[in-house]
Length: 80
Figure 1: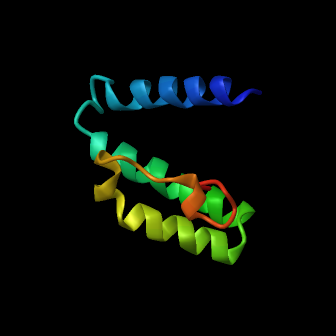
Figure 2 (figure 1 turned 30 degrees about the horizontal axis):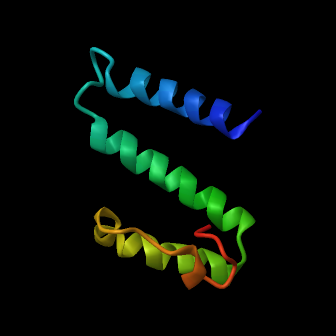
């Protein structure tokens, strides 16, 4: 499965869960569950140092609305 296919599958599932007649008001719960699952996956595949660095970036997410992050600021050259 490609990244695009995975993204679209998650997007479809998110829309199903968050826009259903009985669940339309569960947007925050959906976001929280998805964030929790993402963190579990990152913790599973990243080194402790990389996971901690990612959590630091996430905790400072209010800065994301600015110019963004420069990949050269990170040892691995990537954000994750």
